[in-house]
Image 1 (cartoon, rainbow, N blue to C red):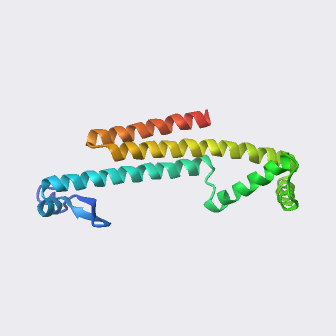
Image 2: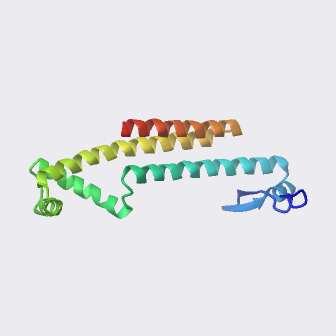
Image 3: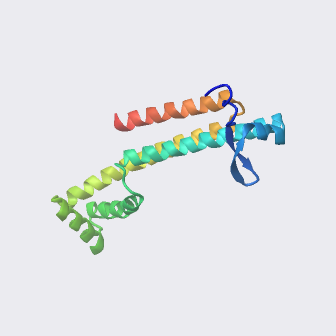
Length: 172
C-alpha cells in the first residue's frame, strides 16, 4: 500500500463487549475505552484466539487420527466395542452377535477376528482421547494463566510441543 492508503483500514480486534465478541477497530477501542482498558481487552481477545487455536488443533488431531471418521460413525464405536468385548468373552446378546456377524460377513472376516480388531482399535482410541484431552486442558490452563504476551506465546509453543510428542508416541 502507499503512504496515503496505509491508514484507511485500521486493524481490528475481536473483543468481548458485554457477552458478545465484536470486531473493533483498534484506534476506536483506544479512543473509547482508554489505552489501559483497551490493552486488557486486546490481551483477552488474544487469549480467546489462542484457546480457539488449541480447540481447532484438537479437532484436527481427532479427525486425522480417526481417519476422518464422521461424528455419526464414531457414535457407533461404543456399541461396536461393547458387542465385540461380549463376543470375545462369550456373553454377547443375540443382537450383539448378529451385529458383529453381519459386519464380519460383509468384510469377509470371521466375527471373532473383527471383534478383536474392534477392541484393539477401541483401546487405542481411548489412549488418543486421554492424550488429546490432557493436552487441550493443559494448554487452556496455561493460556488462561498467562498475564503477558510472552507467556501466551510460551503456552502456544508448549502446546505445539506436546502435540508433536503425543503424535510421535501414537504413530511411533
